Length: 414
Image 1 (tube, rainbow, N blue to C red):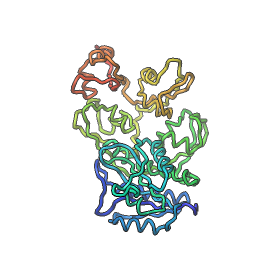
Image 2: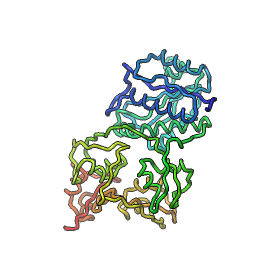
Image 3: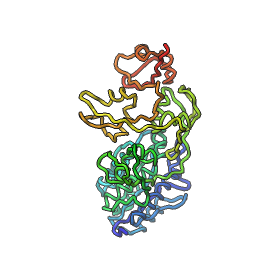
Image 4: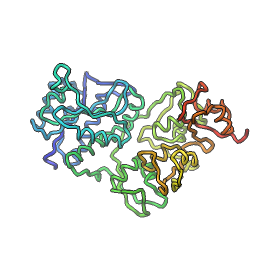
């Protein structure tokens, strides 16, 4: 037991106070799920922790503060984590810390949330307008000298954020655990939440991460790997603490949506999206409802849809992610994810893994609109028609913007 570390975990709102709501999310419910996850994980790490509320009950600010302060007393080493979801049309996570504290922990939490794919807003303090020497939020103002932070994991009224929260709330909670462990010097042990896998011929970190519904970053972190190289027979620890009971997501098609853009937004393949919705064609209509499999929904490919292992490509002088993307008909984003790239910089001789799974049908390529392009010029280049491009990309006008990405179906019969 890490006796010197004590954490009070607050689930915001509750009972008659639901908090923010939108896109099928009620703040009080997710705040409690996240708080319970944090409590369980801290106890597994030997950290003394306590929940402020364990059920859907109404708490006044006074009652909430009383439970926080009475948990471990007035000790500046006690950490208070108040869990919330945001609203107001923004996107991403933010952390608010007390005037009496610095931003170290808050920034560590944001950095870890960023590693899990959440957009990052800011770490900040907020002052009471009537007395700027005091904190705005009572959870800060009335818990002195404890170190109290408010974690806002995302915006429920932003569709993209809401879907991220539904699919990834366990990952986001684990990101907070990781940050606190680092901040407090707690050994971060994931062994209680892992599977073991023996590397087979043809395996890559990417294919193993996909198999176990985790990601390359977590695989490398759990195994202390500094490169993407694997060896046949190598034993890997595979984190699987992201167990979810989430339901599938309903997505309503909007103007400009394509199967490709929707699949990319939810980190699944076009084939999976089509198979899950029983689609036999690529055309979408505005207002159409699509079911998006949740993060834990594994759709097994049929025998004639085997996913290939990535190709290896050595970067040559003059190469860019864009040119390589065009060469292999693979989106830039997929190449970056496959190779754990955080920017677009390449070096001559660098070895890239090129995913070759059926992200798009073989006769469809992704084209990035360049300055001077028109639907006519693009249609002519790819031997297709303007109407086919508009229909495939759900376009209602001929107006294009530079850097827009279009799906183009080659027509070899023209």
